[in-house]
Length: 182
Image (tube, rainbow, N blue to C red; front, side):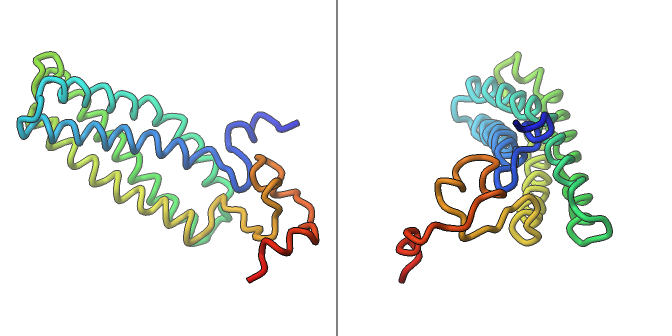
């Protein structure tokens, strides 16, 4: 039976942090896109309302996203390039979150009036740029340094699809050899 930490962090090869980042990044990006569309005159009132709601969703998911990212970072060996990069990633993502919170506050008046305000638009664009940079660093942690990646290419598909089984999987069955034949 998995412990509570496994339920928060996820399992080897199936960590919780990446899908949470997809939710928050998607919400923030949709919110900024709505600010831009509203600012150029495309259905400004619905875009002003939608922007605040989607940025709100991103801010709500920010806490569990940050918590799972911090737990992943704690597993990175000390004094390694990945650990140092993790600090920079953390700083960028915290900065982006603060900027999105500022965007939210700056947009409250526009939300009520059904308008996109210039300060909210500018803050949102800056926040999105910082978010993109921080996300790039997070991708580097996963795809270059392999943080929370389980590389076990001989794991049977049945074991790979079940959380928690791939890291304890048995060797491939001889009948599976046909799957890897050229």
